[in-house]
Image 1 (cartoon, rainbow, N blue to C red):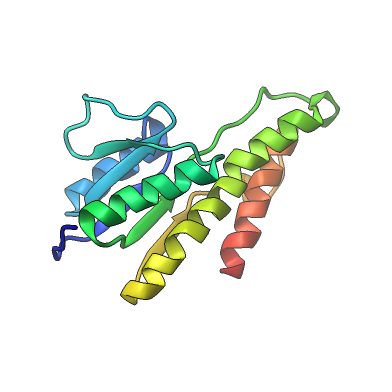
Image 2: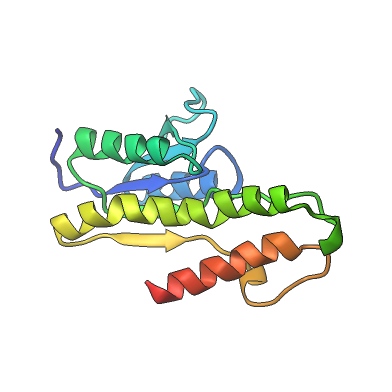
Length: 161
């Protein structure tokens, strides 16, 4: 177990887009950054290390958080970014299975990650969690019912923390 003064960040969904940009920026700001994705590692990133993580799996979440804590001895920042959208269409065109899948990743993934890191952050006496939402968490948009519903849920959950 390594112990240093360098703050440690874990960014979910860091293989592309906002997650990747966040991980790069945190590394530039001096954090030891671990990015995650379902696909695992990638050799193309030099500013942060990638770990395999599926936020829909309790075991995967526990393993990724444990790996960071074991290696670094701390976790100072969690950025919950992992998420996806389904094909845009009318609400009546979506299935219950699609609703369950998008909620399992976009909302319950945040809950799983939060439950996994809060005990460590409490034990070390500090920590920060940033949940990436969307403007659709404040207002709905036609043809985006399920995605907007997950972002509304994230907003409510985040405000309640």
